Structure formats: C-alpha cells, structure tokens
Length: 309
Image (cartoon, rainbow, N blue to C red; front, side, top):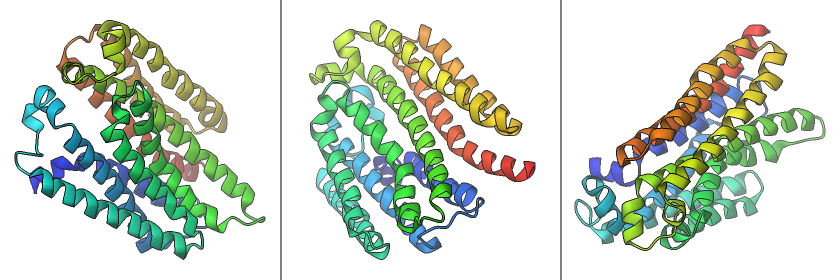
C-alpha cells in the first residue's frame, strides 16, 4: 500500500482534494452560492479529479524509470516494488474511474459535452509523460495548466449549469475569484516545475531531454527563475491592496503577507545561492507550502468577510 501511495503521489492528490473541499465548503457554501451538485456528487467530482491526476502521476513514473534511477533511486517503485504491467493496469483503472464519473456528472447537469474535459485531461497527461515532457517549457506549462484546472473544474460542474439572468452577476464575481486562484496556482506550479527541472538536471541530461536547465545551464536558469519569482510577489501584493485592504479585509491581508508573500521572498533569497540538488528540493517544498497556504486563504477570506459583516 505504501508503494502504491508513493506511485500516485498521495500527498499531491490529498492537496488537490483539500483544495476542492475548501473551495466548496469554505467559500461557495459560506457565501450561500447556488450549486448544481449535491454533497455526494461533489465527492464524486473530487474522486474523478484525483483519479485522473493519480493516473497522470502513475504514467509519468512509468516513463520516468530511467531518469528516477539516476535522480531519485530511493523513490523508484515501478519495476521494483510494483511491476510495470501492474502499474499500467492501475493506470487504466484510474482513468476509467475518472472518465466514467465525469460522464455521469456531465449528463446529470445536462451538459454531456463536459465529459470531454476529463478525457482531454487524461490524454494530455499521457502525452506529457510520453513525449511533451521532453519539449522545452511545453511540459512545464501543461502541468501548471492542469493543476489550475482542478480549481476551474469546480466552476464548470458546480456553477455554470445553474447560471440564470437573475444570478449571473453573483456567479460572474464567484467565477472571477476561482479564476484568480487558478492563475495563482498556475504561476506557482510553473515556477515549481522549473525548480524540479533544476533538481533533476543530471538524469534529464543523461536521457537527452530538453529542459530549461539543460538548454541554458543551471546558473542562467536560476537567474530566469529569480525574475519569474517576482511575478507572483508583485501580483499577490497588488491583489492584497486592491481587494483586501481596500475592503477592510485586514485579517486576510495579514495572512497573505505573512504566509504567502514572506515565503515567496524567502524562496527568492534562497534561490540566489542554490546550487545542489538538496537546495532545489528544499525550494520545491517551499513552493508547495505556498500553494497550501494559498488554498487555505480562500477560507480565511470567507471567514473574514463573515466577521466584518
């Protein structure tokens, strides 16, 4: 069981599930937003999301066996604890579960075409693992987009089907918040993917992959990342001032300053002197914490609004 959980990156899947739970029960329901799915159907949407994502992590591990033998030999599962055939069977089962649930929910909300979203996501993750990962920046962008999609899919399945002329203004504002958080997740995940490329540069080089650190070199890539790291800092600082401070949401503003902006500044400072694999691994974990605190901030925002009211 431990090997299986490692294979599907259980911690990452738990974060996706937590994110979707917080957005539903710590944001949408606290705002009394009308929703298309009941509780158990929303639980199915979470299951479908993590099944597709888990399948993506699994197929990536299957294709990354040679790279992982060089970069992280202690973490290799496929071919050692679990056979490649078994891994493929689990991958197929996870995608059948994810796509099957997506088909059911799409038909329930009267939008059968929405099932294509999960099918395309599954196919894209396979293409990423098998070929696109080796293409400069394309793989990084795809992973970042698909991670942010786990927020957008909430709006697609839970909000879009029940938009009416009467609630369209409320829904537009709610969608805007979801898109803002999806953009935040995209930026942080894109930077994190580049950090992971720095962490895995030796194995990627030996297998002839074309990642940014291999094309530009480690030191130049670090400089690019330093510039990129300023984007979320500037973006979130602007967001805090424009939407939180101006609306007297000082608790949310303080939370974001101390638990999102401060770790991002720490990331930028530590990145300047990072050279070894363990340095980049540490920085990757910092960004994962930033993502976690960013997800929780939507609950803080909802409680702050309720407190002010």
